[in-house]
Image (cartoon, rainbow, N blue to C red; front, side, top):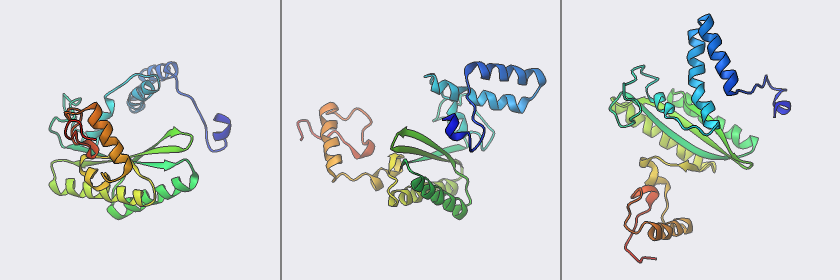
Length: 213
């Protein structure tokens, strides 16, 4: 990988030891901003090592700089809101370029700035994670943000970039209960969860009556 990507920029590898040395150096010479960045990167390195973290929840507070003491509770009332859109892309340059064009056009049209991450799922598929922060206390902003993400989902789906996951408001729009996949999923749901205890209603699946096929 380093040989392949080296032609486009400097490639480095982050390890726990390198991170520890860098943070100690920043403390020693008093570079507070750089130290804060390194502290933010630490949980990301932990993910690669199999260490879970709730630090990503802090991102809902970043636009407003008013983090609450119990920030780990995502249902705690606050000004910060965060919504995601996760289309899947083929592992090819033309698809990534088209996806980039779509998101750029949305940013220009709606005067927003998406946070976008591309995650490699396997050799043929990329998961795009698009997030947008908003003020939950402003009803107009909440509705506008939902509209933007719904339109983005529809535009991506029209290009064949179907969503990997859906928010609650998008279930009815994107979940078709009349496909063979949906019918098969419904039967599996009825066998494993006949009383509808597990995530009732998610992705359009309901328990249905016992013994239904």
